[in-house]
Image 1 (cartoon, rainbow, N blue to C red):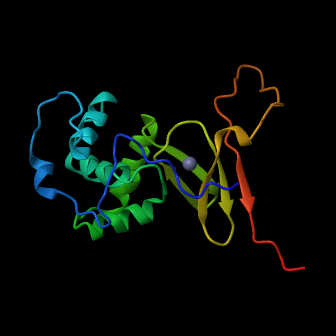
Image 2 (cartoon, helix red, strand yellow):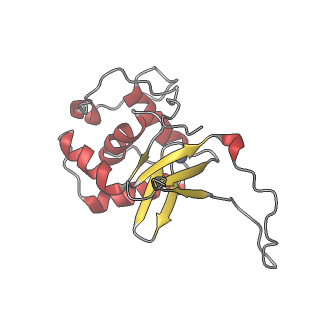
Length: 174
Ligand SMILES: [Zn+2]
């Protein structure tokens, strides 16, 4: 069975189809505290927890990234979303922010080939199907990939993580 939809991240559940960025709230300093159920506030908390200063850019991009639950997104498509949400930001800033989020494990980077890098808002260990020709990345349900014979790492190294990308293509008609 192929899982086509991801489980929503329970911290950020959104009802609205079209999201508009609450730009005015990007300037409002909110006191640190418990999660309020407000996704925007939660992004601020999330940044605080990983030690990233909640700049306007990080808040806005974090909000766009995480408010829609688990998903795989490229820098280019996040950039488009930001512009659509009327948040003017350069593609370079989007790249930098995505890499900063990845460094603190808020995101996971999934490189599919030399030219395509996806950022996964689900940073937990899981593997992916990649649908060739459609540039689509799907989660493989946890228990369905068994990697039980790992190669011995070279002297002085240990295996940090195993990323499996299983490439899919449509079956050719017989
Ligand atoms: Zn994933």
